[in-house]
Length: 362
Image (cartoon, rainbow, N blue to C red; front, side, top):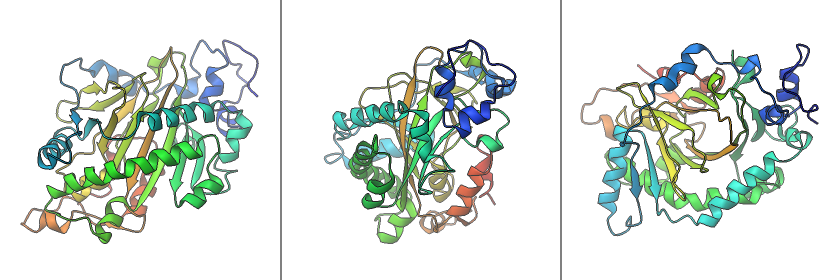
């Protein structure tokens, strides 16, 4: 239970115990009515000044209408591949996922995070009945010098039976339905992307390499005092093959324009899905497709949610430039790395931009 409404925290108040160990998260802090941000969340000045490099421009990430996928497969595929090469991010509309499925999983996200802290904390690292279900706050609190203003629950998909047994009932059915309904879109996206890499068929071996495991996160970014002093999520690129992101209408996701070093907002579009290339596909494409840094700002007036599906290689797979990419003599930029080792490297440290991918560079 959260302490009584206050505007400041006493020196004796243990933020780590309250937010992390007891499961109150930043939602619990937000609901205390704080007027100033706790010092544990104040980011270094270099992270706070990134927003001074935000560009307000007509050109944002591409928005691709995929309604003609079947009739114009090559045309739509080229738009997807071009966006993956230039931006690493794009939005798709008219993708075939029912609006009701998207709205249901957003509603389920609010429902889960509306539960009492004690109920949510049953799924924390120390109490969860399975490693595949993890409720938490920030990113890696024990490794971070400054905490991030976000709560989350992360669900690793093993099977429907495992999900029925262990995923929280408040969100289980809606999260599963969103994952299942996304399957066709994921396969079409990957088919288009790897066709430009001289791979013309996703056989069983390639399927395990590209999409052998999946994880869905449900993220909650509550109202934040002094949002300009912290972040919702710090600079990072995803370790996935692809990420399929559902965001609400609040906004706050920014991507880095690689060459200019400026940041561009991804405006919410009702019914759209945001797609981004992950590190695994950047490595497999030998750098042709870009896994781009992105971050989420904190918000001082509105609660925000997002629901990403991370499409990943199977943990035991070895990732590196695909043979089809380098068979023409192209020099490999990345070494062969076991995917599980790559992921462990990512999760043992705080968010640090694109530094994880250096782990795989030659």
